[in-house]
Length: 251
Image 1 (cartoon, rainbow, N blue to C red):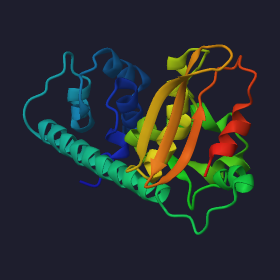
Image 2: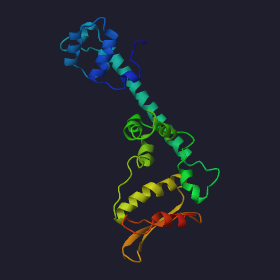
Image 3: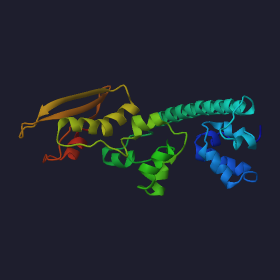
Image 4: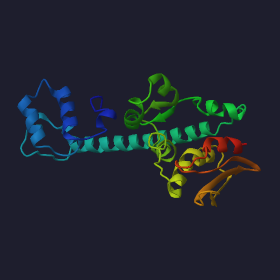
């Protein structure tokens, strides 16, 4: 059993992967043209790994019941157990991150220091799948900063990425329309509040601008009797400064 492939080696069963494995294990017994023959007469599945040299070079392949079938069944079991293990790791990563998001702060800073406070990293980096880590973060952020917020891990939760993180590298686009600002504010303000405290009272309606007479969305989030945020979601062409207005309404 010791010469069976590892879990990592059976992760993907495609011709070039199996052929690489065969070359590493049987390079003393097979010639280059033999490997070429195996490639040209590929039989799907990991059964190739336990065929005799005669069967490997047979044309067409002869696959009677026996060691080949036993190994195919074993590999299938290994892959199934690995998938279950991956699901367990992903669930663990998801709930671990949520618990970290909901950790209560030791103190609430004054609003003048609020931006600096919310820019601080969590107690440990958030796990991100290697592909997303490379595509969206690694090439765009300084490692000294990136490593404090995100870390590459094959056990990262896809659910966590979809529900909470994807808005960071791919923020919603917005224009001057009311609907576009809905998605923009929901992603950047509403969702972080609901992660930390999902029991708040969210409200959205429209009010009319005193001068332009255009309707614009009005947004608020109440926790018990405290209004954590309230402000008009303005378009970029308005003269009013939304930052000043938001600060004045943040309690």
